[in-house]
Image (cartoon, rainbow, N blue to C red; front, top):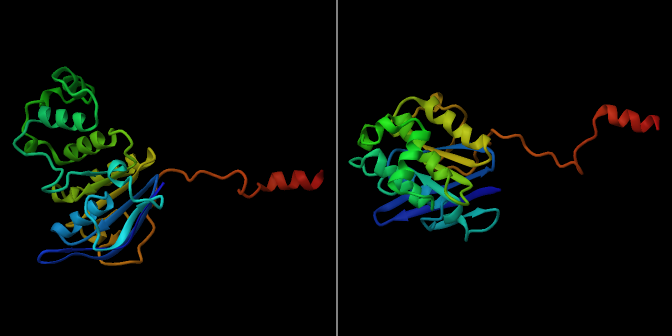
Length: 233
């Protein structure tokens, strides 16, 4: 499974939101896309998920565009998918479970929080949830939605300067077979865990491979011992 943004640009009513940008990420990979703080980097994430139509270029998942909205989840996008800060953790979890078409009644939410060892925080306003926990909760709930195969984490660095907290989480999701893109806006390049794709550029570094690439037994090279055995025969 592969998501490919090919020369995607977006124009807004007051000018360019996103200059032409390309990015490719596959199942089991973790990519970082870095841009200036503001609506442009979020616009790129929404384009990856099929929620904004590019002005130029296109985004495809395995060569198709129709399934993007069902298969790509945008996590914590400002003004789009971020929870209301005034809501309690209990309410946010209930809304996210319902969005995932999972049981979301009062008892279901309580059980989910207990399973995550978070019952003590059920009444806590979401704005007071620790940043690393916030990103982990929202990404875990998004990944539980039926059919989701791609996670786009929108600027977790706007909540914390602890890069390792969200980078480790992104790797975990990629290790489980998802394609993961983290949008970054405030973290210096030198502090990022691997070279990022840059907004406004077409040539991008390879994403981090977190899950072993499956070996095609029909085309894989023979091991030396196997070849020697064949020669002896």
